[in-house]
Amino acid sequence: QPVHCVAPNGEAYSGVFQIGASRQVDEELVHMVNRLRETSGRCVTNLMVADIYASLHGKHKDYPYLSIFPIPAITGRLDVLRAINMRLAQCLMFVGIGLPSAQPDWLGGIVLQAKSCLFLETKMHVWKKIWSESYSVERSSEVVSINRHLAFKARESLRETAHVLQPDVSVYYPTVFVQLWRELHCTPPGLLRRSDGKSWFTKFKGEPSIDDGGLYRETTATTTLRYLRLTAFDSDAMFASIFPDQSFTCINEQDQLVELIPNGANVRVTLANRFEYADALESYRLHQFDEAVACIRNGLASIVQVDLLPMFTWAELELLVCGRPTLNLALLRKKTEYSPDMDMQDTLVERFWRTLAGFTSDEQQLFLQFVWGRSRLPFSEVDFGSYTFKLVRHMSPSNPDEYLPVAHTCFFQV
Image (cartoon, rainbow, N blue to C red; front, side, top):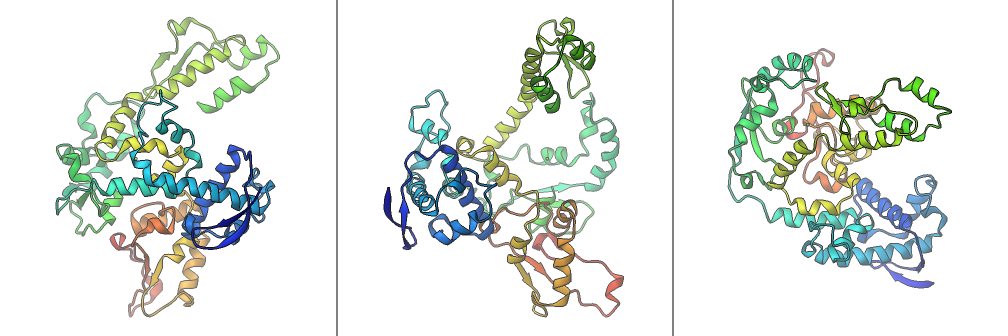
Protein backbone atom coordinates (compact mmCIF):
# COMPACT_ATOMS: atom_id res chain seq x y z
CA GLN A 1 0.00 0.00 0.00
CA PRO A 2 1.55 3.34 -1.07
CA VAL A 3 1.93 5.82 1.77
CA HIS A 4 3.37 9.32 2.13
CA CYS A 5 6.21 9.18 4.66
CA VAL A 6 7.92 11.94 6.58
CA ALA A 7 11.05 10.99 8.51
CA PRO A 8 11.71 12.63 11.91
CA ASN A 9 14.37 14.79 10.27
CA GLY A 10 11.71 16.33 8.02
CA GLU A 11 12.64 14.53 4.80
CA ALA A 12 9.50 13.56 2.87
CA TYR A 13 9.49 10.56 0.57
CA SER A 14 7.13 8.09 -1.04
CA GLY A 15 7.06 4.79 0.80
CA VAL A 16 5.16 1.55 0.72
CA PHE A 17 3.70 -0.13 3.78
CA GLN A 18 4.60 -3.78 3.33
CA ILE A 19 1.88 -5.99 4.77
CA GLY A 20 2.98 -9.37 6.09
CA ALA A 21 6.72 -8.68 6.19
CA SER A 22 8.48 -11.53 7.97
CA ARG A 23 10.29 -11.30 11.29
CA GLN A 24 13.58 -11.86 9.45
CA VAL A 25 12.98 -8.72 7.36
CA ASP A 26 12.51 -6.59 10.47
CA GLU A 27 15.56 -8.12 12.16
CA GLU A 28 17.77 -7.47 9.13
CA LEU A 29 16.51 -3.89 8.95
CA VAL A 30 17.28 -3.35 12.64
CA HIS A 31 20.74 -4.88 12.13
CA MET A 32 21.39 -2.53 9.21
CA VAL A 33 20.33 0.51 11.27
CA ASN A 34 22.56 -0.60 14.15
CA ARG A 35 25.52 -0.97 11.78
CA LEU A 36 24.91 2.51 10.35
CA ARG A 37 24.98 3.93 13.86
CA GLU A 38 28.21 2.06 14.57
CA THR A 39 30.07 3.01 11.40
CA SER A 40 28.82 6.55 10.78
CA GLY A 41 27.41 7.68 14.11
CA ARG A 42 24.05 8.39 12.44
CA CYS A 43 21.05 8.29 14.76
CA VAL A 44 18.00 6.43 13.52
CA THR A 45 16.04 9.69 13.43
CA ASN A 46 18.54 11.15 10.94
CA LEU A 47 18.62 8.26 8.48
CA MET A 48 17.60 9.07 4.92
CA VAL A 49 16.68 7.06 1.85
CA ALA A 50 20.23 7.44 0.53
CA ASP A 51 21.59 5.75 3.67
CA ILE A 52 19.30 2.75 3.14
CA TYR A 53 20.26 2.45 -0.51
CA ALA A 54 23.99 2.69 0.22
CA SER A 55 23.73 0.05 2.95
CA LEU A 56 21.99 -2.45 0.67
CA HIS A 57 23.91 -1.78 -2.52
CA GLY A 58 25.96 -4.85 -3.40
CA LYS A 59 25.28 -6.52 -0.04
CA HIS A 60 22.59 -9.05 -0.93
CA LYS A 61 24.44 -11.80 0.95
CA ASP A 62 24.39 -9.76 4.15
CA TYR A 63 20.66 -9.03 3.89
CA PRO A 64 19.05 -11.94 1.98
CA TYR A 65 15.50 -11.25 3.20
CA LEU A 66 15.65 -7.46 3.00
CA SER A 67 17.27 -7.25 -0.44
CA ILE A 68 14.27 -8.76 -2.26
CA PHE A 69 12.12 -5.72 -1.40
CA PRO A 70 12.21 -2.41 -3.29
CA ILE A 71 13.59 0.63 -1.50
CA PRO A 72 10.14 2.28 -1.00
CA ALA A 73 8.92 -0.84 0.82
CA ILE A 74 11.99 -0.86 3.05
CA THR A 75 11.73 2.84 3.91
CA GLY A 76 8.04 2.37 4.71
CA ARG A 77 8.90 -0.54 6.97
CA LEU A 78 11.63 1.53 8.60
CA ASP A 79 9.08 4.19 9.48
CA VAL A 80 6.89 1.57 11.15
CA LEU A 81 9.82 0.28 13.25
CA ARG A 82 10.93 3.83 13.97
CA ALA A 83 7.48 4.77 15.26
CA ILE A 84 7.32 1.66 17.47
CA ASN A 85 10.77 2.35 18.88
CA MET A 86 10.04 6.03 19.56
CA ARG A 87 6.96 5.14 21.55
CA LEU A 88 8.59 2.29 23.46
CA ALA A 89 11.60 4.46 24.35
CA GLN A 90 9.29 6.64 26.44
CA CYS A 91 7.89 3.80 28.55
CA LEU A 92 10.41 0.94 28.33
CA MET A 93 11.91 1.71 31.71
CA PHE A 94 8.50 1.23 33.32
CA VAL A 95 7.89 -2.17 31.70
CA GLY A 96 8.63 -5.24 33.80
CA ILE A 97 11.41 -6.54 31.57
CA GLY A 98 12.99 -8.54 34.37
CA LEU A 99 9.82 -10.26 35.56
CA PRO A 100 9.65 -14.05 35.17
CA SER A 101 8.97 -15.10 31.60
CA ALA A 102 6.07 -17.22 32.83
CA GLN A 103 3.84 -14.28 31.89
CA PRO A 104 4.49 -13.98 28.12
CA ASP A 105 1.20 -12.14 27.56
CA TRP A 106 2.25 -9.27 29.84
CA LEU A 107 3.70 -6.21 28.16
CA GLY A 108 7.18 -7.10 29.43
CA GLY A 109 6.89 -10.57 27.90
CA ILE A 110 5.71 -9.16 24.58
CA VAL A 111 8.62 -6.69 24.49
CA LEU A 112 11.11 -9.50 25.18
CA GLN A 113 9.69 -11.57 22.34
CA ALA A 114 10.15 -8.59 20.01
CA LYS A 115 13.52 -7.39 21.36
CA SER A 116 15.35 -8.22 18.12
CA CYS A 117 13.08 -5.64 16.42
CA LEU A 118 14.15 -2.84 18.75
CA PHE A 119 17.03 -0.60 17.71
CA LEU A 120 20.12 -0.75 19.90
CA GLU A 121 19.84 3.03 20.16
CA THR A 122 16.42 2.63 21.80
CA LYS A 123 17.74 0.15 24.34
CA MET A 124 20.82 2.23 25.13
CA HIS A 125 18.68 5.34 25.71
CA VAL A 126 16.84 3.49 28.48
CA TRP A 127 19.94 1.80 29.84
CA LYS A 128 21.99 5.00 30.10
CA LYS A 129 19.15 6.95 31.69
CA ILE A 130 18.61 4.40 34.46
CA TRP A 131 22.34 3.81 34.90
CA SER A 132 23.05 7.55 35.24
CA GLU A 133 20.52 7.81 38.05
CA SER A 134 22.39 5.20 40.11
CA TYR A 135 25.82 6.88 40.07
CA SER A 136 27.61 7.24 43.37
CA VAL A 137 27.57 10.78 44.79
CA GLU A 138 30.90 10.26 46.55
CA ARG A 139 33.49 12.73 45.28
CA SER A 140 36.45 10.31 45.15
CA SER A 141 36.85 6.74 43.98
CA GLU A 142 38.40 3.87 45.89
CA VAL A 143 42.16 3.46 45.45
CA VAL A 144 43.60 -0.03 44.98
CA SER A 145 47.25 -1.05 44.90
CA ILE A 146 48.25 -3.89 42.59
CA ASN A 147 51.63 -5.64 42.57
CA ARG A 148 52.05 -6.71 38.94
CA HIS A 149 55.58 -7.99 39.51
CA LEU A 150 54.19 -10.51 42.00
CA ALA A 151 51.45 -11.52 39.56
CA PHE A 152 53.90 -12.04 36.69
CA LYS A 153 56.14 -14.24 38.83
CA ALA A 154 53.22 -16.48 39.79
CA ARG A 155 51.80 -16.71 36.26
CA GLU A 156 54.01 -19.50 34.91
CA SER A 157 53.59 -21.83 37.89
CA LEU A 158 49.81 -21.33 37.82
CA ARG A 159 49.67 -22.05 34.09
CA GLU A 160 51.27 -25.44 34.66
CA THR A 161 48.52 -26.43 37.11
CA ALA A 162 45.65 -24.44 35.55
CA HIS A 163 43.54 -27.56 34.90
CA VAL A 164 43.49 -28.54 38.59
CA LEU A 165 42.08 -26.45 41.44
CA GLN A 166 44.77 -26.15 44.09
CA PRO A 167 43.68 -27.06 47.65
CA ASP A 168 45.92 -24.32 49.05
CA VAL A 169 44.10 -21.17 47.86
CA SER A 170 47.00 -19.00 48.96
CA VAL A 171 48.78 -19.88 45.69
CA TYR A 172 46.22 -17.64 43.94
CA TYR A 173 46.88 -14.63 46.16
CA PRO A 174 49.47 -13.08 43.78
CA THR A 175 47.03 -12.98 40.82
CA VAL A 176 45.65 -9.59 39.84
CA PHE A 177 42.10 -10.90 40.23
CA VAL A 178 42.61 -11.98 43.86
CA GLN A 179 44.57 -8.82 44.67
CA LEU A 180 41.63 -6.76 43.40
CA TRP A 181 39.15 -8.87 45.35
CA ARG A 182 41.11 -8.50 48.60
CA GLU A 183 41.22 -4.73 48.10
CA LEU A 184 37.59 -4.24 47.12
CA HIS A 185 35.47 -7.02 48.64
CA CYS A 186 34.55 -4.85 51.66
CA THR A 187 33.68 -1.82 49.54
CA PRO A 188 29.92 -1.10 49.29
CA PRO A 189 28.88 -1.79 45.66
CA GLY A 190 27.18 1.61 45.45
CA LEU A 191 30.56 3.34 45.69
CA LEU A 192 31.74 1.56 42.54
CA ARG A 193 29.06 3.12 40.33
CA ARG A 194 30.98 6.05 38.88
CA SER A 195 29.96 8.51 36.18
CA ASP A 196 33.56 8.82 34.97
CA GLY A 197 33.70 5.15 33.96
CA LYS A 198 36.35 4.20 36.55
CA SER A 199 35.04 2.25 39.53
CA TRP A 200 38.38 2.69 41.29
CA PHE A 201 41.79 4.32 40.89
CA THR A 202 44.72 1.97 40.39
CA LYS A 203 48.27 2.22 41.70
CA PHE A 204 50.89 -0.25 40.48
CA LYS A 205 53.37 -0.91 43.27
CA GLY A 206 56.91 -0.03 42.23
CA GLU A 207 55.68 1.61 39.01
CA PRO A 208 55.38 5.41 39.21
CA SER A 209 52.22 6.34 37.28
CA ILE A 210 49.07 8.43 37.35
CA ASP A 211 45.75 6.70 36.77
CA ASP A 212 43.73 8.78 34.33
CA GLY A 213 42.05 5.67 32.93
CA GLY A 214 44.93 3.73 31.41
CA LEU A 215 45.88 1.79 34.54
CA TYR A 216 42.23 1.02 35.28
CA ARG A 217 41.75 -0.46 31.78
CA GLU A 218 44.79 -2.72 32.20
CA THR A 219 43.40 -4.41 35.42
CA THR A 220 38.59 -11.97 32.19
CA ALA A 221 32.76 -30.26 23.12
CA THR A 222 30.67 -28.63 20.31
CA THR A 223 32.21 -30.63 17.44
CA THR A 224 31.48 -34.00 19.08
CA LEU A 225 27.82 -33.13 19.63
CA ARG A 226 27.36 -32.02 16.03
CA TYR A 227 29.07 -35.16 14.75
CA LEU A 228 26.88 -37.42 16.88
CA ARG A 229 23.67 -35.76 15.80
CA LEU A 230 24.25 -35.11 12.11
CA THR A 231 26.41 -38.00 10.89
CA ALA A 232 24.61 -40.87 9.15
CA PHE A 233 26.32 -43.99 10.52
CA ASP A 234 25.97 -47.09 8.32
CA SER A 235 25.87 -49.63 11.12
CA ASP A 236 26.41 -50.34 14.81
CA ALA A 237 29.86 -51.67 13.94
CA MET A 238 30.81 -48.40 12.22
CA PHE A 239 29.61 -46.37 15.22
CA ALA A 240 31.47 -48.62 17.67
CA SER A 241 34.68 -48.27 15.67
CA ILE A 242 34.51 -44.47 15.98
CA PHE A 243 33.35 -44.35 19.61
CA PRO A 244 34.85 -47.49 21.17
CA ASP A 245 34.02 -48.10 24.84
CA GLN A 246 32.30 -44.74 25.17
CA SER A 247 30.07 -44.60 28.23
CA PHE A 248 27.65 -41.96 29.50
CA THR A 249 30.51 -40.02 31.08
CA CYS A 250 32.74 -37.05 30.31
CA ILE A 251 35.79 -35.32 31.75
CA ASN A 252 35.20 -32.07 33.62
CA GLU A 253 37.52 -29.07 33.90
CA GLN A 254 39.30 -30.73 36.85
CA ASP A 255 40.16 -33.82 34.76
CA GLN A 256 37.65 -35.82 36.77
CA LEU A 257 35.28 -38.43 35.35
CA VAL A 258 31.64 -37.33 35.61
CA GLU A 259 28.62 -39.58 35.09
CA LEU A 260 26.03 -37.90 32.89
CA ILE A 261 23.22 -40.16 34.10
CA PRO A 262 22.88 -42.41 37.16
CA ASN A 263 25.36 -45.28 36.82
CA GLY A 264 26.52 -43.70 33.56
CA ALA A 265 29.96 -45.31 33.71
CA ASN A 266 28.30 -48.69 33.10
CA VAL A 267 26.03 -47.58 30.25
CA ARG A 268 27.56 -47.92 26.80
CA VAL A 269 26.88 -45.32 24.09
CA THR A 270 25.44 -47.07 21.05
CA LEU A 271 24.01 -46.08 17.71
CA ALA A 272 20.53 -46.41 19.18
CA ASN A 273 21.08 -44.18 22.25
CA ARG A 274 23.60 -41.70 20.80
CA PHE A 275 21.05 -38.87 20.81
CA GLU A 276 20.33 -39.42 24.51
CA TYR A 277 24.08 -39.27 25.17
CA ALA A 278 24.43 -36.07 23.10
CA ASP A 279 21.54 -34.46 25.00
CA ALA A 280 23.01 -35.47 28.38
CA LEU A 281 26.49 -34.21 27.41
CA GLU A 282 25.11 -30.91 26.13
CA SER A 283 23.05 -30.41 29.29
CA TYR A 284 26.09 -31.00 31.48
CA ARG A 285 28.32 -28.67 29.46
CA LEU A 286 25.70 -25.92 29.55
CA HIS A 287 25.24 -26.14 33.32
CA GLN A 288 28.63 -27.21 34.69
CA PHE A 289 29.49 -23.62 35.62
CA ASP A 290 26.05 -22.62 36.93
CA GLU A 291 27.35 -22.00 40.45
CA ALA A 292 30.22 -19.81 39.26
CA VAL A 293 27.98 -17.95 36.80
CA ALA A 294 25.43 -17.35 39.57
CA CYS A 295 28.18 -15.73 41.67
CA ILE A 296 29.20 -13.54 38.73
CA ARG A 297 25.56 -12.56 38.19
CA ASN A 298 25.16 -11.65 41.87
CA GLY A 299 28.22 -9.42 41.66
CA LEU A 300 26.98 -7.86 38.45
CA ALA A 301 23.57 -7.24 40.02
CA SER A 302 25.21 -5.25 42.82
CA ILE A 303 26.50 -2.73 40.26
CA VAL A 304 24.18 -2.64 37.23
CA GLN A 305 20.46 -3.09 36.57
CA VAL A 306 20.46 -6.76 35.54
CA ASP A 307 16.68 -6.69 35.18
CA LEU A 308 17.18 -4.66 32.01
CA LEU A 309 19.72 -7.01 30.43
CA PRO A 310 17.08 -9.35 28.92
CA MET A 311 16.01 -6.59 26.52
CA PHE A 312 19.36 -7.02 24.70
CA THR A 313 20.06 -9.93 22.40
CA TRP A 314 23.16 -11.97 23.25
CA ALA A 315 24.97 -10.51 20.22
CA GLU A 316 24.18 -6.94 21.32
CA LEU A 317 25.33 -7.61 24.87
CA GLU A 318 28.59 -9.13 23.65
CA LEU A 319 29.15 -6.12 21.40
CA LEU A 320 28.50 -3.63 24.21
CA VAL A 321 30.77 -5.43 26.67
CA CYS A 322 33.58 -6.55 24.35
CA GLY A 323 33.38 -4.33 21.27
CA ARG A 324 34.36 -5.56 17.81
CA PRO A 325 37.24 -8.08 17.68
CA THR A 326 38.56 -6.38 14.55
CA LEU A 327 40.01 -2.87 14.55
CA ASN A 328 37.80 -0.34 12.74
CA LEU A 329 40.54 1.76 11.16
CA ALA A 330 38.10 4.21 9.58
CA LEU A 331 36.54 4.88 12.98
CA LEU A 332 39.94 5.24 14.66
CA ARG A 333 41.13 7.72 12.01
CA LYS A 334 37.92 9.71 12.46
CA LYS A 335 38.56 9.92 16.22
CA THR A 336 42.24 10.93 15.91
CA GLU A 337 43.81 14.26 16.85
CA TYR A 338 47.27 15.30 15.67
CA SER A 339 49.89 17.48 17.33
CA PRO A 340 49.98 21.08 15.97
CA ASP A 341 53.11 20.40 13.91
CA MET A 342 51.47 17.78 11.67
CA ASP A 343 48.17 16.80 10.05
CA MET A 344 46.61 13.80 8.29
CA GLN A 345 48.49 14.63 5.05
CA ASP A 346 51.87 14.52 6.78
CA THR A 347 54.22 11.86 5.38
CA LEU A 348 54.83 10.47 8.87
CA VAL A 349 51.08 10.18 9.49
CA GLU A 350 50.48 8.43 6.17
CA ARG A 351 53.25 5.95 6.96
CA PHE A 352 51.74 5.31 10.38
CA TRP A 353 48.26 4.49 9.03
CA ARG A 354 49.70 2.39 6.21
CA THR A 355 51.76 0.40 8.69
CA LEU A 356 48.83 -0.09 11.08
CA ALA A 357 46.60 -1.25 8.21
CA GLY A 358 49.24 -3.86 7.34
CA PHE A 359 49.14 -5.39 10.84
CA THR A 360 47.34 -8.64 11.44
CA SER A 361 44.20 -8.54 13.58
CA ASP A 362 46.17 -9.81 16.59
CA GLU A 363 48.89 -7.19 16.07
CA GLN A 364 46.27 -4.43 15.86
CA GLN A 365 44.80 -5.57 19.17
CA LEU A 366 48.28 -5.52 20.71
CA PHE A 367 48.73 -1.99 19.36
CA LEU A 368 45.52 -0.86 21.07
CA GLN A 369 46.67 -2.53 24.29
CA PHE A 370 49.94 -0.62 24.03
CA VAL A 371 48.39 2.81 23.46
CA TRP A 372 45.14 2.56 25.44
CA GLY A 373 45.32 -0.40 27.84
CA ARG A 374 42.45 -2.19 26.07
CA SER A 375 42.40 -4.50 23.06
CA ARG A 376 39.16 -3.29 21.42
CA LEU A 377 37.68 0.04 20.41
CA PRO A 378 34.26 1.27 21.49
CA PHE A 379 31.87 -0.09 18.90
CA SER A 380 30.68 3.28 17.53
CA GLU A 381 31.67 6.93 17.33
CA VAL A 382 28.94 7.81 19.83
CA ASP A 383 30.40 5.41 22.41
CA PHE A 384 33.84 7.00 22.17
CA GLY A 385 32.43 9.85 24.20
CA SER A 386 35.09 12.51 24.73
CA TYR A 387 37.98 10.15 24.03
CA THR A 388 40.18 10.77 20.98
CA PHE A 389 43.35 9.03 19.83
CA LYS A 390 46.27 11.48 19.94
CA LEU A 391 49.18 11.13 17.53
CA VAL A 392 52.12 13.30 18.56
CA ARG A 393 55.49 13.78 16.88
CA HIS A 394 58.34 12.75 19.18
CA MET A 395 60.82 15.63 19.08
CA SER A 396 64.41 14.58 19.71
CA PRO A 397 67.77 15.75 18.37
CA SER A 398 68.99 12.16 18.00
CA ASN A 399 68.38 9.74 15.13
CA PRO A 400 64.65 8.81 15.22
CA ASP A 401 65.49 5.26 14.11
CA GLU A 402 67.29 4.73 17.40
CA TYR A 403 64.29 5.05 19.72
CA LEU A 404 60.87 3.44 20.03
CA PRO A 405 57.35 4.92 20.17
CA VAL A 406 56.21 6.17 23.56
CA ALA A 407 52.61 5.52 24.64
CA HIS A 408 50.49 7.14 27.37
CA THR A 409 47.58 4.79 27.96
CA CYS A 410 45.86 7.23 30.31
CA PHE A 411 45.51 9.77 27.49
CA PHE A 412 45.20 7.35 24.51
CA GLN A 413 48.33 8.87 23.01
CA VAL A 414 51.36 7.67 21.10
